[in-house]
Length: 160
Image (cartoon, rainbow, N blue to C red):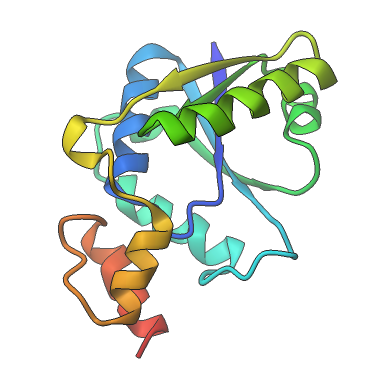
């Protein structure tokens, strides 16, 4: 069974990677989909994010179970086009759940066949977010507890 793990992944964090690994333990194939949103001010281009994700997971034993895609538009349309009926969403805290719950209901309203499965990262990763990581990078802080080495380097290069 294939599932979609969507997000901006700007940048990919250890929390994202933890949820991704959990999903690969549950499903045959995980399509990690990078949302391309031209209205958002992203640090990395969609192509850079794809490459950073690829580099971050290429040594993992579950690497062969992951496909990296980019999409714009409605996620339910991407899912339908790829004949996928399940979305994976990482939920770190209650505020995430509230937002993701509304999004799951909206996706189901747009396509009644789409289900959303919420996965939690390990407890020590529940506070990690892309926006906090970007803030730390902006101030030249230590990123090693939050992102893989390749991502930390790319962030430092962007903010230097």
